[in-house]
Image (cartoon, rainbow over all chains, first blue to last red; front, side, top):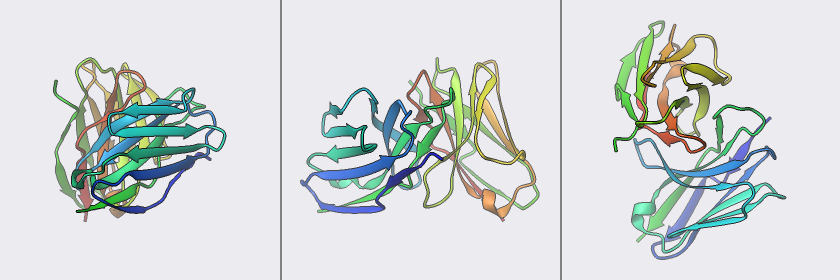
Length: 113
Length: 110
């Protein structure tokens, strides 16, 4: 079945770059997303990439997609303490015509001052 | 523009009861999806509605049902609540491929 895997925890120093990785199994996924969730809150859409792209940059965020290896990464440049949160990778369920997103279990990013 | 709104924010029920959760999408968005997020996990897809029609259903029992109204708002209903239904229930609205989430309803089943 479809699956999305992420590492559970990442700790960085303020000002460093953070790289959060994700792998997925559904090769027919066409849209891939990164969401941020702060404690007690809903999900904030950070950025997304189409499967026909290999990179997308949006201010401090860079998304890289390796479609051959089904690997997605999110790089946050100049990481700030306000970036501390849980980051979810999600892909659309490519073989259906629904809006179903399949999420990873989330990566907790801890930013140390 | 107002984002996705959900009500109530918190809810406490006992086993066997029924619950109704509500969602108002972003103005102009015709699609609403529901997700369940158990503590420590990623959200799991429950339903998607588009133009009042069910477009997709996740792997949830028939105790879960939903509907979408002419103004595109939506309700999620859960019957015969179990302890395992305790979770954050998230609603997302979508213009096309992007999904924008609301703050969620925290349901606790005792």
